[in-house]
Length: 307
Image (cartoon, rainbow, N blue to C red; front, side, top):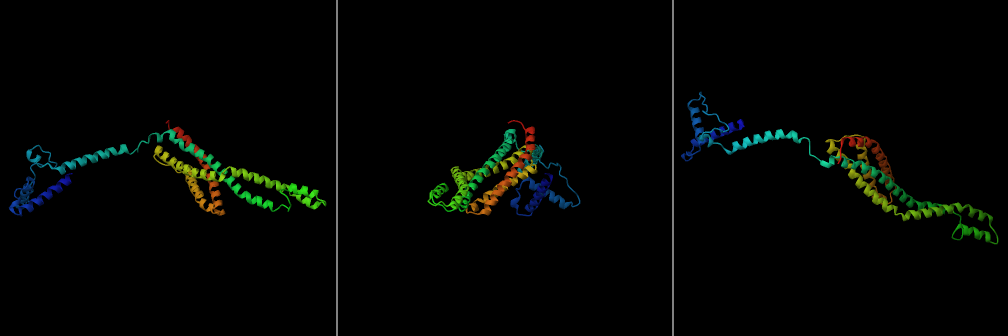
């Protein structure tokens, strides 16, 4: 503040000297300009003699009427700014602790992450079962076709009818009958696979696997992000470790599995293999999260309170 006032006084003196050397129209200047002229003239008459202001009042706080007239608005602003700066410096430590997150720091929402992720593990296993059933249904047709190619040629709708017809013929072909009888287990396998395929088809596994997989990726990613946010709200920092790394890797594997779906719909076996591998690895990381997250759960129960 003192430096600013000194610069202001120097500027006023220069302005007063300019006014003295100008036309007489500037004779009616303010008292500040007149005192600047008098000070400049005194310094010119006695260059080796220093003149002191009879009253040193840089903030113009004197009670005299002459000084009260010279109290300017910038001086008030400077004093106010200095006071505001001192207040902000004193208030900073009280605000350094961060905001109060309320119930988000409590036990209720802190337990939401482990509960939801544990549920997602079970949901992930069920979604994988649906995917396995759909793959079984889709590949079962090839298995049935391969078995049908191993059957001997026969007339009729089944091997049993063909065997009965061969035995009832005038001339019984024993070799044909034996061949047809040897093929009966194959026919039985074909009937079992056909019935199983029909049962799987009625379960609508493809659509259920698709919808549950999409829901798993959405909810799982949401609570994978919610967990670190809740930790930061409670502790003010994150704790990098196996649990955090497993969660990040799991989200990446979910994204990779979802990215394979368009190619899978076009019949790419490579995309199907990557999809299956990413989900199997994701379930493995899920198991790692349970192991590494249990000690964290115990600390949450210890450090938090309801709600």
